[in-house]
Picture 1 (cartoon, rainbow, N blue to C red):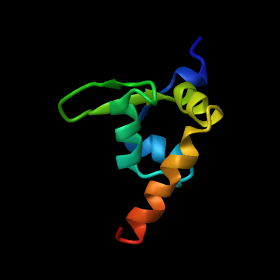
Picture 2: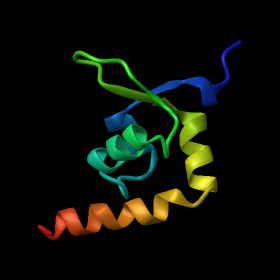
Picture 3: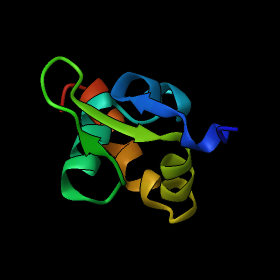
Length: 77
């Protein structure tokens, strides 16, 4: 039986799971830096993570710093 935390999540899905507070680009940067656990699948798929990895990221408090990226991007900065 698969745990919901093992469910694969795309960049768009991750941003949605985080309530849109964090842009897809901010999630991609967190994945690329290793701050958020995931894997680059390449091609049209790109970066993937899991719901569990997102929950861990939230618990570590890393989302707060990334939420500012969304705010600045929306302001054009």
